[in-house]
Each structure stands twice: as structure tokens, then as C-alpha cells.
Image (cartoon, rainbow, N blue to C red; front, side, top):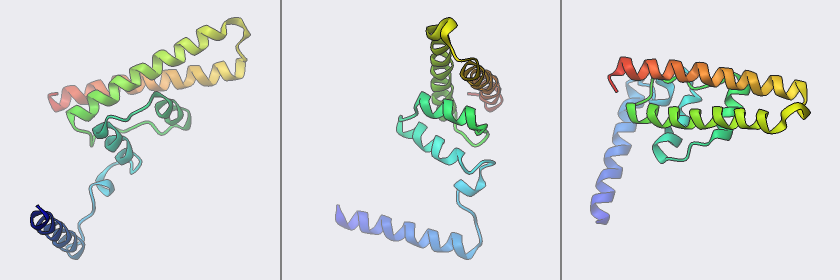
Length: 129
């Protein structure tokens, strides 16, 4: 088993050198938004969270999605839907006591995520997912 692992690691190391020598970029560098790499990685690992979606929406840094696989898109869409529902529930729970400034921020994040859902669904369709 150790011999196989050493062989594989040797091959990975050789490929990294070849990529560097040829001036090839990494997968992360090929994305429209470098920050998408971490989201795709978390999608692959099954550890996406609504809180991060909401924060990215507030920061205006939602995932581009064009570099995602069909499986990653499905996972991102699912967590985005949960994030939208969370934001709706948050506003509803506060009712008339909600701070107008906070309510505005939450509604803007909600709208951004809903817009993102439409975009990602379109990407799914164009990729034949």
C-alpha cells in the first residue's frame, strides 16, 4: 500500500512541475472568481452552510457558478434555498419589532440570493444537468 501511495505522490509531484514549467494555471486560477474555489470545495465535501451564503450575499460575493459541476450546482442551489428561507423566517420572527436598517439588509440579501438561484438554475439547464 505504501509503495502505491509513494508512486501516486511522485506522479502528482511530477505533474505539478510540468504544469509550472509550461506556465499552466491551477484550477482555482481558472475560475472567474477565485473565491468560488472554496465554495465548490465545500460543496464537494458536503459542508456548505446557509450562514456563509447570507454573508456572501451581504458582501456582494455570491458564487459565479460557471465553473461548478452539475453536482456542485445542485448542492449550492439547495443551500441557497435554505438561506433564503432562513432570511424570510428571520424577518417574519421579528415582525413589527424589526430594526428597519437590519430589515433592509436582510431583504437585500434575500433578493440577491433569489437572483442567484435563477442564475444557477439557468447554468444547470445550459450544462444539461
